[in-house]
Length: 482
Image (tube, rainbow, N blue to C red; front, side):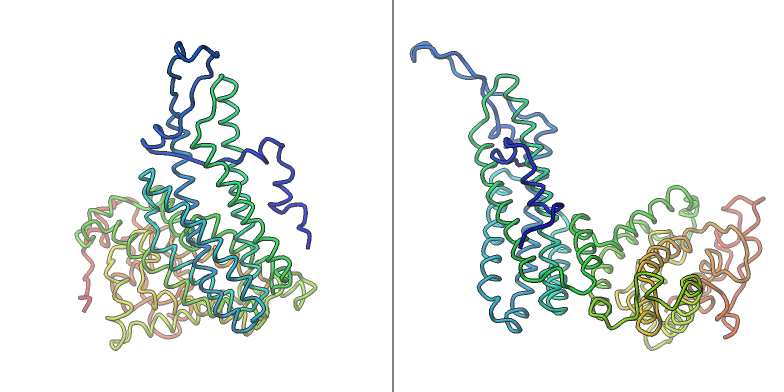
C-alpha cells in the first residue's frame, strides 16, 4: 500500500540525490576526533616524494552531534526491540499469520541495536542515564498496544517508524552538510565516516520498510488512529520522557524559579536536599503511575468510553460549554473521597505518608507520590468519560490544566483567601494540619463534610516578610507524621 505524501518514505524520496546516496550519522568523544577525520587532497607525486596527508579532526560541535546521535539511536533501537518483544506473543497468539513478519522485524531491530551497542563501546560513549526508565516504558507501550488489537499494534509501529524515519533523514541531511563542507575546503572524507553513512542508510531503509508493513496490515484502521499515533510519536519525540513527566518538570521548574518563594527553604521543617529528593521521588513514581493507567487508556481507545470529537457527535453546543464545570465537580468529588480515604490509619502510613513527609512542599512535590497514591487520585479523570459524554480535546486540555493546578497548589504563593477555591493556601494548611482540605479544585465537599479549615489570615499579610509569617516561621503546630 502506498504511503501518503507526508510519510518519511515520501520525504526521503524528495531529498536531493546526494542525500539519498550518501547517508549521514552523528559522532562525539575524543575517540571520534581521532577516528572520524579528513585528509587533505594532495597532488599526485612519485611515491618517493609523496608527503603524509594532513589529518583534520572534527570540530567539537560535530563530535557532540555524532556522539549524541549514536546515544539516541541506540536508545531508540532498544525501545523498538522491547516493543516488538512485548507485542509478538500476544499478536501471534491471536493472528498466527503474523509470526513470520513479527520475527523478521524483531530480528532487524535486534541487529540495529547490536550495531549501535558496538559503536557505543568502540567510541566509549556513555548510554543514556534514563536507560532503565526507557526499558519499562517501551515494554509497557508494546504490551498495551498489542492488547488493543492488531490494528493498534500496527499503528504503534507506524508511529514509531515514522518518527525514527524522520529522525534518520534529519541525521542524513546534517552529515551530508558536513561532508559538503569538507569537499569545498578540499578534504576527502575519512573511511570510518563513510562506513557509518552506509550503515545508517541501510538501517533507515529497513525502518521505512517496517513502516510500509504496518500500513499494509491495517494500521490506519486502529480505533482513534490519530490520537494513538500522536501519543506514541510524542512519546518518541520526548526522548524517553512521558508526557506527564515533561509537564511535571516544565511547570514545576517555572513555578519554582518565578513564583515560589525560595526563602521558604530556610523553614525548619524543610528537609535537607528536599528539592532533589522531591524530584527523585516523582520521577521514580511517574512511570509506574503511567503503567497503572494503561487499563483505562485501553478502554478509551477501544471505544468503551463516551468521548467524541465534534459538537455534531455530542449532545449539543450547550453541553460543550457545560461539560467543563461538570467534569471539575465530578472529579473534585471523587478525589475528595479518595484523598480522605488515603488518610485512614490502615493505609495512610503505607501509601499516602510519602507525600506528607514534605511538610513545607515546593512545586516539585506536586507528583512526589507513592505510585498507588497518584494512580488512585487520577481515577476520577478516567471514570468520567466512561459514564458521561466528553469531548476528547477537552479531556486532553483538562489533563494539562490539572498538571498546572497540581503544581500551583504546592507553590506557596498565597494570592487570596478565597472561601470557594482550594488554592495554594488551603493545600498548605492540609500539609501542615493533615486532616483538612482534601479537595482538588474547590472547598465545596470539605465544607459539606466538615473537613474545611480556613487558612490563617496572617499567611496573607503582605506587610510581613515571609520569614515572619506564622506558617513559614514554623509557628503552626505540626502533628507527628506517624
